[in-house]
Length: 581
Image (tube, rainbow, N blue to C red; front, top):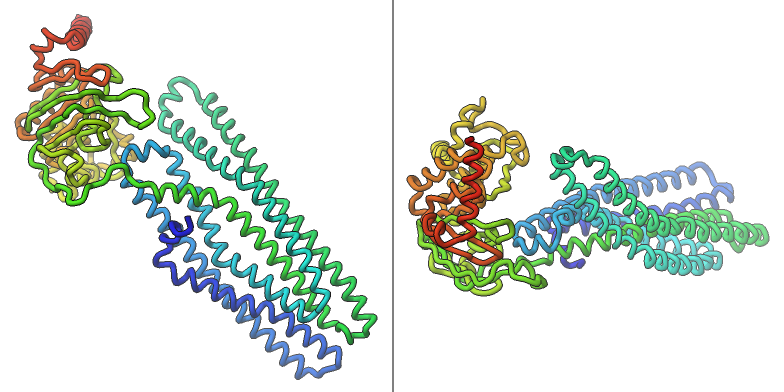
């Protein structure tokens, strides 16, 4: 785990090493101050002159300034190293997630990935900051203070040999009790974020069904659950402070009582006032060191689970990778499904697709119809290798898709989904997702083909119109047409429209399909639709039922041979006839 996280330090390695060195000098100066002060007290008790006091004063000032300068420097290097480490960690996680397949993303939830990149990274960042500074400072301060205290006070310092092991045992017991609770809390954080994400995404549905109060209660219950566990863990961790204060202050009382007695009875021969004052100072330094160590262990306990969750993301390897010596050129848009079966997970009881055999020539227009859950979308997701088949093979351009470089394959297969996504930016920015180097003329041509140019020209800023996140400031039909134009700019060999014209009227739908036939005749076009009119003029229509191909043929052939197709056609035309009446 540490090795995996350490890879994200990179350019901040020098600052990470420099911080403990600066802290070491700071601690040495701080621990030397009480020793010098003790000598000054003894000199003053012996009746020294002002010259001696001034000399000691200058020494103390120089030592204090050195400690301050190195402490400030350590703070700066620590802050820079820890924030830089967190930046690299988020970057590495994000890059790793970008390489994930859908199967990998399904393994984690979206809300869990968000929590890991935010809350978990912050926890690890705080621990890293404490480890390179406070976790170095506290043990050094503890060792130096104990050593100096023993040198100055002899047997009086033996009290710390008793209290420190007791505190260490107590700290271990507290951490062992709190760690499982923190592990449980972070899992509940995922569920809480999942609830928030679901609510925000479905806000229109929540409001239309007036379910705000229900959602508030559900969120409040989840938040209260997290609060209870966190409170329980924090109560356990809070035992550190009073336990340490009791032990150390008991030690201080012991030092003051028996130290004062020793000073008085020995008349300063066995132990003098200067030694006594330095021992008290070292006692308080030991107290502060133990308190800081307690903070470090508390933070490390909290972040251990976060670190493990981050490493899970970093160690997860994509289930889809490009092979060695991968093919980088797709010959044409031909597609072959050879006895394909597929299930979304190894634990799934039934196949989503079973025994699919299908052969599509390059440039063909293929329509796909079927009821909800018939695996229409699953079928086309195997073409750009968003998932790998469980059995059989899918070939594009005469080669198994697993033989291609993933980027090369997906650049030649454009998919337009029903739930289209636009990103915040201008229309041009969104269109250039299809082709970063597309000219204005190429973008305009693609939009005309997708029947989007007409409404774009009506905007005041035309192609420079700003699109809000998710395309919330354009209609569903406009969003679909922009996404179609974006896909066309890829100039793919295969174009898949997954019910992506459902939000446009039938006339516009027909014009889009007419444009496809005229302007991209060599591109294989696969159209998944609920409306028969959207696929009626396709070269062939595939009817899916229960993860299998029920029938294949032209519109006329299916009207004669497929009960499913004929029933859909009849119901839609009856509905149309009734609307017309």
